[in-house]
Image (cartoon, rainbow, N blue to C red; front, side, top):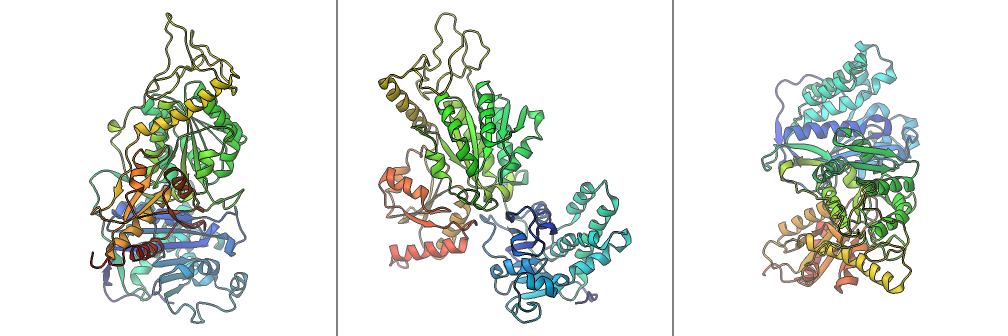
Length: 628
């Protein structure tokens, strides 16, 4: 393939949306490439959603299928809800990346591959009997087999790098090429590279040269006859930034500390996909945030609970396996009745399971994964940006009701990103700790109750007159003394449950998206299914069907009007990335015949998949829909 000069400007076609997937070895820099394209796309003004996909192995053998890493971005000139089902453009750095991803590429889509890597050895390693670049098996796609490695090495020859080091810049060549294809500015990535490699001028200059060469290659080669433009999206005025779920959740915890006037203490053991929260919070000492990397999960939650007892906002982060280990200490927090935030960034299970893949399989563990009657409020984020608000809400409930709260995210939200409108900090609601104070004219009762919230006083140690007993043994009502009295135990168990139930009084009613109020089917979800469900409902409505959507943030307790909402529809559909955990809860509590749509593939639902299912249900439920 040659890079001959074009005779004039190339035509530009306008698109409303595009899905691009970068794929290669873990060492090919696909996450960095995708992140830079995302940042440049955000700067351009498009709405976007991303889906990084990591291998579980720290470093799988080069060129093998288990080692393939990919990054998908969906960007558009309108509001979008998902990172896209199937890419329109696939950039594959080697045969393994091509084989792992080509089946997802849209028919007629563009495949850009590094032809340099398609050697007999590399082809055999992933099971190719012949070279797919030559045998016609890719005729359904627009194939561009380019010697990305050779072009990159040539473009950086002046910097005196070894061939191995020079070839590492091929991801920047690919970034430059794709940036030209879709009219993305590269100035932001240039500035990024200048800062990232400031200490190594040759590496810095080589990467910048590769980036610019890739961009100019697109301009001059005859292989690409057209480029494309996706105009900026029309979105509400404000200041935006691109943000991942883990970063947004971290910012929400920092904000909760500021809104409550409490120091934030994070006790955590690193675990995928929650570790980035520990990394991010460690950067914010200026906001009175302390991070403690514990030796194990139990130590992390124990330290966080101790910090809460001392008057801080105690937080611990984990994933499903760690939540199981933390169960006993969460039960202790239920008995002590002090605030604690437990963040569970869910992943595929059970056991080690799928560490880098997403799932919603911890809901029942969050609800019931402790010994005894140990109820805790459960809150779930619905999008990467929403993790900020969900974290503040979890803190509000924990502090107001003196209870541990489990905040559910998942790998899709944690690593995915979207534009986030920076909030007006002055408009964020104050969280009032209302610490106990000593009244010399009365006896302090550590287990007395607020009449509205049923919360007990928060009395950190060291305050004269507020001394009291703590521990895991049952407490006597009012005094907090150890009690083995059967009637008292029954009272305290019911009181702790009533306190969690009382949270429903402070949360809003469930809002239903039912455009004309005539839908017969309600689709209800929780967590990260929000985007795919919303996109699926859009497809059904465009096809002429009526369908309602609702999404739950509060999973324990449920919103007060949920039962009424469920009974207002002929059919209730619950899509989940598990085998029906929310569906079971709804059926048990409200006696509705909720129907599940379930998948546990380690990947989010596709909009087309859900849309087709919803349309089929609408036709079966309302055969006369065309005339209704």
